[in-house]
Image (cartoon, rainbow, N blue to C red; front, top):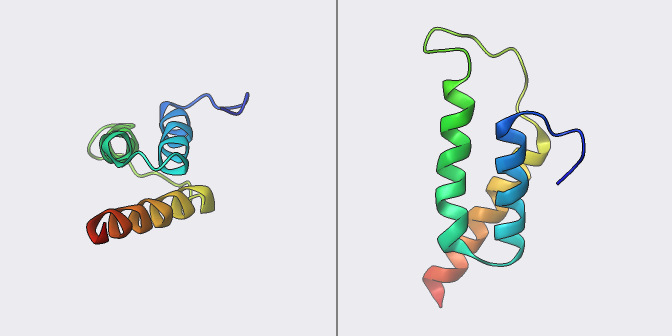
Length: 74
């Protein structure tokens, strides 16, 4: 985990990256769901998030999708 991670979503993303790196889909799936919840819940239902989607998040989700496909084939 990076030392400058203050947001819950950043910490969940780090955990997701580690789970995917270790090929642990059982842990990665709920982490991806928790990440989605933490990102949409911040500020309430009418809040508008002005931050862009980090490349790191997109890459983690791509790797998660690859892991899902690989486990379906196995």
